[in-house]
Structure formats: structure tokens, C-alpha cells
Length: 188
Image (cartoon, rainbow, N blue to C red; front, side, top):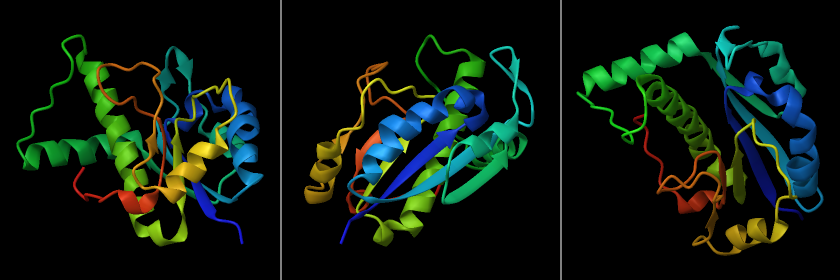
């Protein structure tokens, strides 16, 4: 019997998925499927056809990525949720010195998206031996290392991240780890 693995994609999926979906299928999804039963979860920040990096978004592009589970929220709703959480808890958001207001806002939106993935994983933690979380705008040069998945399944002390854009902490957007390792928190 093969172990179940969940691959999760997070963020503004429409941003680049038309350029990355074939690569993600080839270097990640299809590689993992060789050894594991795979489900795919997507949480999409639907930017409602706004411009990102000067390009108008087409949210229909989200359908280019295969998936088992799909959730999305309009960015306007995400922003309201974040505002309500910050206001009701008197939270002050500070980031690195070089972050503009827009970068801080986008960072918090990313954290919101990752929280949505965490909530999904918490509800489904008994269904999967391992989770892989990946930004949909990643273009992978190498195949995912199946040994990292096996290590995570066999030893809950292993959590894999990337060294891309280290930024004096853990990078966002790519993780491999066992689900039972984490304790999940519900507040964003």
C-alpha cells in the first residue's frame, strides 16, 4: 500500500501558472506520483482580474493546474478578514526595514493564504503522511527529491525548505514535512 501525500499550492495562482504548470507537473506532481498516492489542494487569492506586475490577471488560468481540492477567496474579502483580525486584536504589523506598505500588505496576504492551507491540513492531517507546499509561481530546476518525502514520513524532525531568498529566516512558499509534526493555530 502506497502512502498518501498532499501537494498544496498557495497564493495568487493566476500570476504565473500559465508559465509554470507544465514544469510543476513534470518536476513535482508526476515525480511524487511515481511513489505515492497524491492529492492536490489549491488555495487561490483571486485578485479579481486586477493587474499584477503590469499584467491583468485571468483567473481562468487557475484551471491549468490539476487539483483534488480547490478553495479561493476574492482578495477584497481577504483584505477585510486581515483588517478585522488586525483591528480587533490591536496588532501592529512590522516587517524588515526595506518593506514598503505594499510589500507588507502582500506579505500578510501570503501569510493568510498559508494559514488557509494550514487549516485545510489540520482538518485532513490523518489522511496524509506528508505535505508538500509550493508557490504556484515556482519554476523548478530539479525534480523534487523523493528521499526528502520519505525522510519526512519516517522522522517528524525533518522539515525541508529552500534556501532561495533566505531573508534571515525561513523562505516562504516551499515546504516538505509530516503533518503530525505541526500544531496548528486557528487565528490568522
